[in-house]
Image 1: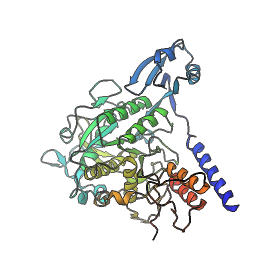
Image 2: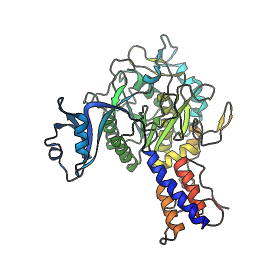
Image 3: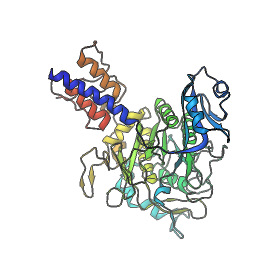
Image 4: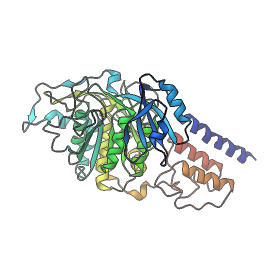
Length: 473
């Protein structure tokens, strides 16, 4: 009877957690715009007829539309009415999103007279301490990113920069101006995408970069443009996507786009944000997305970095040196936007060595190869500030063995421990039906019996990023 009560409590925890995951702080809707997804047999004209709204744009093949509501219409009422239509899967505002550095008012510091190597690249670029702290130098003896494409969803890039242009693909797109030129535009944060690109090029020098512009020069974007960029990246066959941005709004269209990337095995990396708060940010908090917090030169959490139990790993984010747009070709900048490229580059190098890594296997691999030894002591992961540790690129490329990545409790054989494994185990324990496991051992806590305590162990692993299931001796 006690075991049965324990099981009921655990099942209640599953339901509560599912509800809690959907409770997020509201973002900033763009007045007069909404995003709508309809069923495959639905037609937008039929759905919108008489609503005072019309289609402004669409994402090919997804039945997803950006709709515009007439200036005289009641924007919120139109959305409420569309939600009741049986042909509508979801409808939501098009939320504004800002680059993280706009929150902390972080600005770049151009280097007016950098000492150049061969007249192109500054010495400081290659010898900055952060590069050595993540093991890049040794990692390059194993992989350099050759044959791998990384999409950078940002605010454009300087195609004329001498360090970048050999690596930039011309098949990118500008989802702000709706054209095929994702070059940066003048603004307060015009160099953001160029700076991110430089760091990735430094750490994965032989990769190809696909620039996708979803933000303007002042760092302003929206969830529809971000989703468009993710879909486009997947359609172009990229291997990794860098997303140095975030919002507190859980957007259905961004979730949908991220799921499409997962289905195609694309690794995704996102910055945690620069609000100095313990809040979930998106896309960093989405399943499969590697969330990166920022640390300073003393290996301490950066004063501006967001954090929380969704954090996977941390990376250097203070006083980084990289490429800038325009006349000031090089400079220094700080922010979690620039921590994310360290992890993105690690994924690029790993993909070169094992292109078959799924999204979730990559996430777990990056976690388990991170360094737990910091300047201040030893980390006991998972930690809300540092996740599973500081990204270690050398470990990531030198410890590749997919067989070792498959979790002991991966009961359905999809290469990860997830909610589907939890429910398989629940069915087993409840004796509701005979469960066939394609992989793994349901005795995940290795106590010799399969019971509710194994379910509790799984709950801790899947929802709270607890320790990995061990291999029983």
